[in-house]
Length: 194
Image (cartoon, rainbow, N blue to C red):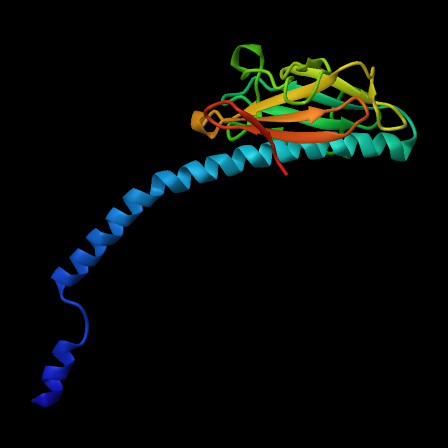
C-alpha cells in the first residue's frame, strides 16, 4: 500500500502542468518582441559588415594584382528586393563563378535617395560625400588600393525592410580606401561602430 501511495505522489498533476505552460507562454510573449528587435539589429549590422568586407576585399585584390579592380553593385528585380555586390577582379562587368560576392536582402540592404537618412557628412569631417546608386554602380580601386577618382567620400546607407526601428547603418569609404561603419538609431544621431 505504501508503494502505491509513493507512485501517485511522483510527477505533476494536470493543473500544475497547465499553470507551468501558462507561465512559460507569458514569458515568451513578453520576451519575443525584444528578441526579434535584437535579431533585426544583428541582421542590419551583419549586412553593413559584409558590405565593408566586400569593399575591403576589392581593395586588397587591386593591391595584390597590382591593377585596377572594380566592386560592382547591381540590384535584382526580385521580390523582396536584393542586391548583388561582387569583386570584379577581371573587370568584365559580369559575375563569374570564381569572383567573391555578397547578397544583401530584406534584413539589411542598400537604400537610395528617397529612403536615405539625414546625411552623415558633418560627422565625418569637411569632406564632400556621395552616395553611389544602390541599384547599379561600380567603384574602382587602383593598384595602390585608393578609390578612383579620389575626390569624394563614398557613403553606402543600409536599412532593414523588416524592422524600421533598427535604424540605419552607413559604410563609409574614404578616398584612400579606408572603411568605417557608422550607426544611427531611431533618433538619427550617427555614431561610429568600433
